[in-house]
Amino acid sequence: MTAPTESVSFTLDVLAKPWQRAQHKGKQYFTPAESRAFKALVRDTFALRCGRGWRLDGMYRLGITANLPDWHTRDWDNIGKNIGDALNGVAWHDDNQVVDGHVLKCVIGVVSVSIEVLRIGDWPVKRKAVPTLPILERVHPRDPLAPRPATPTPAELRAMYPRKRKAVR
Image (cartoon, rainbow, N blue to C red):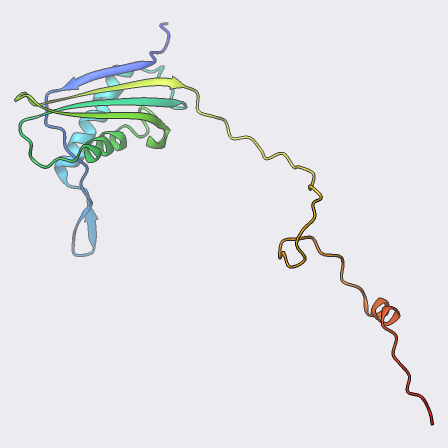
């Protein structure tokens, strides 16, 4: 058995579809068919290239080169967002694990999109918070977060503030 790869790169001879906001008809929202088809192509191609040993838990670098036919309005961040979302569950658990991402737009007449995913390290493990001892500091008397002494009981209040008796004449 071979060791799992730490890098996968591939080129698709299709136009990179930028991310599109979900559209609606009446009360139903749906993702456009072109966007769904592009995401499925990216996801399936990555799954075929990476094999079974690919680990989803880690930090990743994502490199995208989009060769476009013209300078038509295609935002670079929407191209990266669409590809990042397409690889959720296949290359990583969630695209917040991508710590380094690059999108390059080129107009060279040939339509293609090149994608490179590189695993660059382990994702930090969440550790339980270690309880710390309170630091005794001098606090402002009106600080609402300052520790307050316990409220005295009514008997203690009577002892602290005795009633003054009226003098009898």
